[in-house]
Image 1 (cartoon, rainbow, N blue to C red):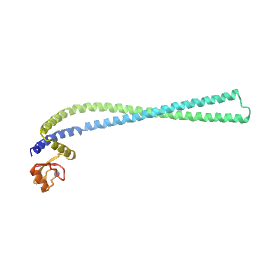
Image 2 (image 1 turned 180 degrees about the vertical axis):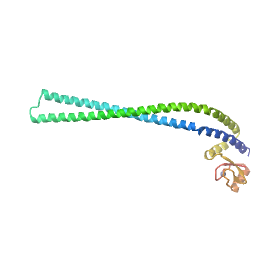
Image 3 (image 1 turned 180 degrees about the horizontal axis):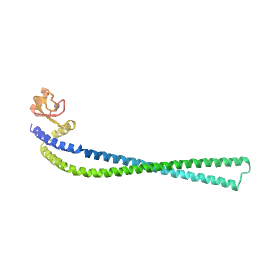
Image 4 (image 1 turned 120 degrees about the horizontal axis):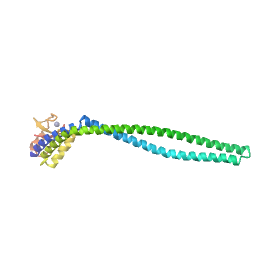
Length: 234
Ligand SMILES: [Zn+2]
């Protein structure tokens, strides 16, 4: 089967290109780069969450401040009433005092809440400053690493491009269906093809059933090893 031999020689080039590509991907510097990038993204997410909290707090602060102003006005009115129109008996005096006390309690609870919001706001701004600083540091580190990585990997990338081109050239003329099977097997196991040696798959050393051997001999269909799934070739 001519196409199978073409696929076999394609595989040799494909594997060479993959090896260089894998080396590029697994370079420690690249992995550190990816880790730093993930860290930066995470920090950006936390920063955004804090900003959302800050916005919610700002709204709450406005609402409390309004309530505080209203309670102050109410107290002022009560005091005003007390001066301009003093209560005529003990009962109405007690009523007025109770109302004033109620206002004072409201005022104090609003003030407490404002202080709490103020404290939270300080915490938020400290946290976001910390995040900002560490993000700036990480980004600087990332940029430096990237520069080094780009310089270091440039040669390997060119090497990879050349190998990939050579592999692509070998792919010319291979039937589309065969290539599709090759690619799908390759996702499961690599290298995706194995020679048949003494009736055994040389990928996993499993003896193949005689039906499979006959099919491979006939060369009319694609036969995959029952054990490892590789495409078998005579
Ligand atoms: Zn096998």
